[in-house]
Image 1 (tube, helix red, strand yellow):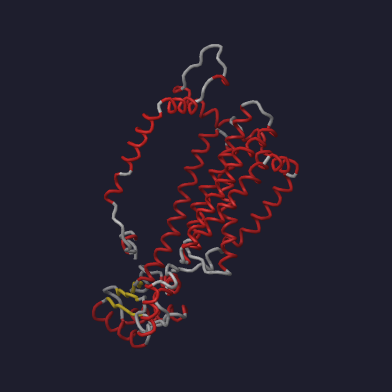
Image 2: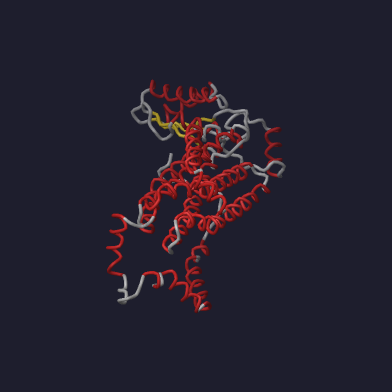
Length: 415
């Protein structure tokens, strides 16, 4: 690690340029990472349940209502022309999709039911088993925009594949909302901890780089193998977390060494040879642990594990090579100081105990040093207190109910 630190110091511009090329090259591929991801994939080849499904498909060919159905709801004032247009829109969407169809008989029945009852349940035909209809259902959702009225007729999709397609769509929206909400909160916490905009931005930037590069790799891998749509959620959640954490470990150690009086060059080497080494071994442990999911013969779990393994490996590489270069280039800007630190100091001043005259900062124990000493002096009391808190937090587990109902995972106002 010391030799790596020296190399990164000497070749910092080359390393930075290489990473910039990688990130820029990854951007177009990362933007298309979901183009070839597939839904489903939760079956286990060779299992008893899969054998039963294959036997059912063989003995009872899926001709009608093979997992996907449509519900058309006509407004009370809908005209016959609007009803015809609503049914035709469903037929056209199925035709464009190519793997499901609306027969003329079912279309005529739908028109008759809409004219008399304002609601029609319309089966869609397919030659595919229900377990392979998640992707067609996703395409139909994009074409039909379920739950939205079009010329007096509101389409809906129903059936297990449609539920999976809706969950995939919902999970993407939730992930985007979580990132939009989470990043500002993390940024504020980092600003409060570091007191420097440059230092606070480094972990966030490295987390973003890790997710972008992983997205590009996911896109390339999805060209060669089936990968679940949920791999993007896994890579994003895990990637941002570990990249921020790993960057924090190294950056905090560097700042501690600088505060202790070491030159910046020596502080970077020490940070890499201590916290950097811990980051590498931590990443290896996470990757090996996630590899255990490959013992389950399930493509969805395997692809999610692969996405998480890749993003952790990229985060380790970014933290141990790009971060030291950025620390070197930013110099003193990654240390506490400036307007932000001044504001934090003012806010903390009323709660800070006054130092005795003649005392110096290095001699004064910091909060976590004092906390650690108190905990170590009373280990039994500390264990009992922490156990009591954890058991209290775990009380809801006693009332936890497990299940496998996809419908209950949707908001009440979902189509």
